[in-house]
Length: 405
Image 1 (tube, one colour):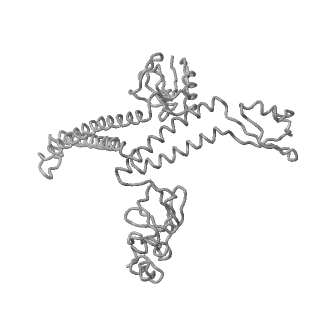
Image 2: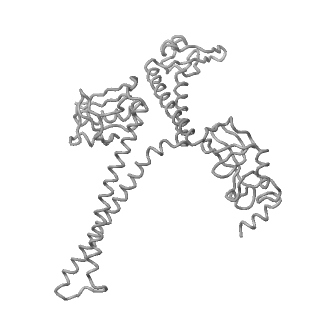
Image 3: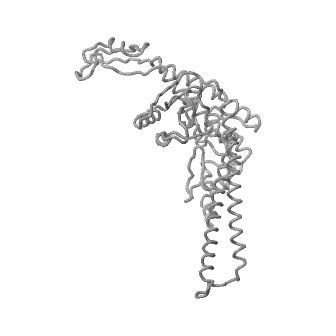
């Protein structure tokens, strides 16, 4: 029997199949991936197929349904087991360590593939070069000579060997690229800016789950006026009784024949959502601790809208940019084509390509490198605010002419 199982611990995995049986193509076409690193099930047998990115997440039901239907149609006996509630025993920190271990294993494996292919390809190309070096320079094929056919075949073999060698070299370079990407996996995943953006996304997802648990507000007719619905002729109280426990009336407008009701979340959906909230909270806590550690190591801080005001300046790279507007996720700052020539970029000294006023750009808070008030900026960089500064109103034409030159 083939068992399609989903738990928060393992994700979606197919048990009871092997790489060699006739179910593989069906399962692959349903969107599952192969892996030789899956743990076998004590009751269901060998594991080889899985759905990516399903650990610690609710089941992707459409994958499971599509695969089960295709297998059943092909004559296989299929069983589906789904558990979206039971929390995993593996912590998020342990899961991250597993990811990094697999990345290291991929780096080593791909590097081996690359070295083998490059060595083989270079050797074949060198052999061809040595064979060609023994042929006198400019020696033509001697048409009509008894050696003609032999020399033509030798040339064709050399060309074919050289082509195969270059194919090996190209394959080796591709494996080397994959090895490089695997080696950079952990550093890229743990980078400060990347982690800060990930935390923002996870917190947004957490808030979405929390809102979902509060239920959904709907507007109903007190007396249903359309006779083609199942609710026709039923009272408001009777219809609410069919909804999950906790659903209730919020307000009632008899004159307008309308009522505002709160539809509670069903117990099953609540259990699934609460599990996700627990897992998301654990993940956010992990990454926030990582951010704090990086900030301490790098001497950086996490900037937010509370740290800036309109008219202040924010540092990004080596330049300071005037803040035009403070947003919840980013800062709106002055910018222009002449910014590369400026230490302090303001709305007054920034210019577009035609010499007119510059524009504004968004700067995410994770790219902020410092804060400076307007009085401090004028004290530290008085030349940026003088009327003779490049890009100022008094010298805009002169700067444009100089830039064009």
